[in-house]
Image 1: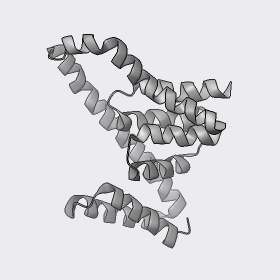
Image 2: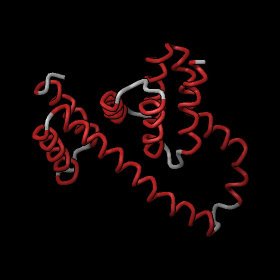
Image 3: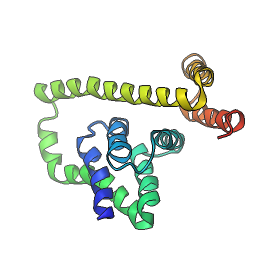
Image 4: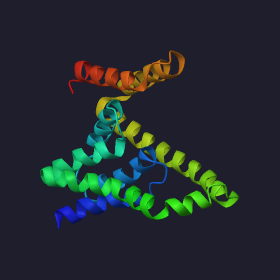
Length: 177
């Protein structure tokens, strides 16, 4: 039963997470944090930070780790397969159909309507992480990390993975993480 739950937890975000890893992150959080309670919001945030710092797709890294933590090596395999299965199925069965209608105005309109929804979901996720860090690390530390990260990303054009590693080191050194 556990492996079926692992499969469902990662298959559903793969189906409805149109737009790749960033679009599926809030959906994965809803499954593994809210529905099954395998990880806490704090753990999910740390996992997301580490997954962003590593190369490759975010969703598969998160699935592999959470699947392993919950169900061992086979749980990791099940979670990884469930994450890539929707894309695999879609590629196999719908490639011809998608190619036929790729220039359709309706398809372009649908894609344009989905992008703001993804942006709102990511905004809600960021707010949840901010509010959680506010309570666990304190307001001043959270503001320092947020402002320094924003300045490094926007003003100095530092690569996001370097900013994430820097924030992790700051947390380890100054916050006793």
